[in-house]
Length: 121
Image 1: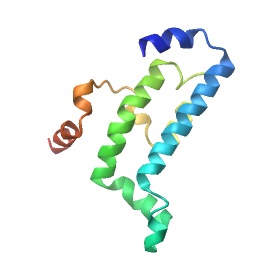
Image 2: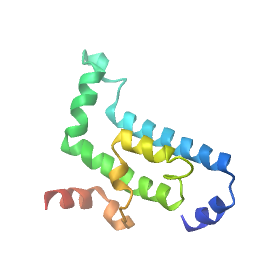
Image 3: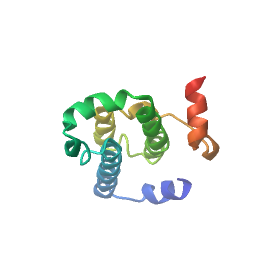
């Protein structure tokens, strides 16, 4: 992140917007991918039902935590959350992942076992 912060300081507004859009698309893709939308219709299950139920499950919450507790704070450190009109902040709010913006986690805490242990306490 430190190296990227130096590079991002020199980017134009349009280049920063491109990075915002990329970050959003990548996060949205990862979030949707964890829901497996191509799988459920095969079993006769409506995707809307899965999308309404699955994010509330403990395992899905852990997975989302592992994914976004590192991405969202780093987007903030790079100035992407609030660039121009806060476009990325609004998208992350809609996705329900903005609560991770101030998380500070080291690599040791990102293991699945650590996440499970933290959830259990």
